[in-house]
Image (cartoon, rainbow, N blue to C red; front, side, top):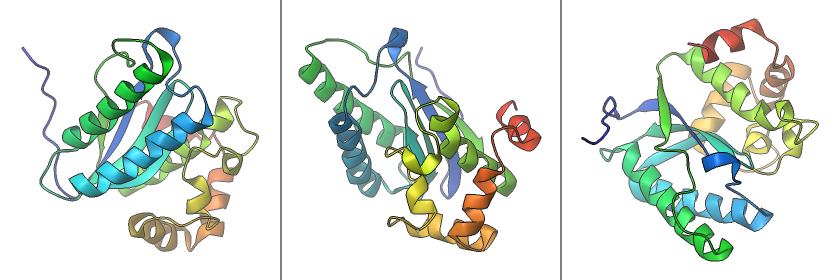
Length: 188
């Protein structure tokens, strides 16, 4: 019987994540990350999804997504990652699945959870030792959140409304990984 989780709802935020199969890499070189991000932009528009925050890591990914239309996020994610895996398999001369299983997701239904999750997503490469600061990791949208690149209206609104602008969000993130509130949300 196919797996069925709770239905995705319009105008609702979701933390979506997945990991590569058996310690493989999802992204082997910069062009792989860029290709995945191009696919993300293309299919997000097509399926009415807002990518609020993201971070692509060598062996996993995190997205904070908001479903804007009636099509469920699962269609967007299946289209996006099926296309990515097919291209990666051709390029790398491999066959079969690249992920451990279906993507996982958590409905994010409180504003304070959204803020903590954004910080978690943007600090992921720092915690993993891949970058000394979140703005140094080129495969997340942290630079857009702090005003160094263009971002979408939803992210701009969140940054302006809750942190008073990019400098406020940068300070919030710099408060750090060890914040007990962050740990509480992510262990729920």
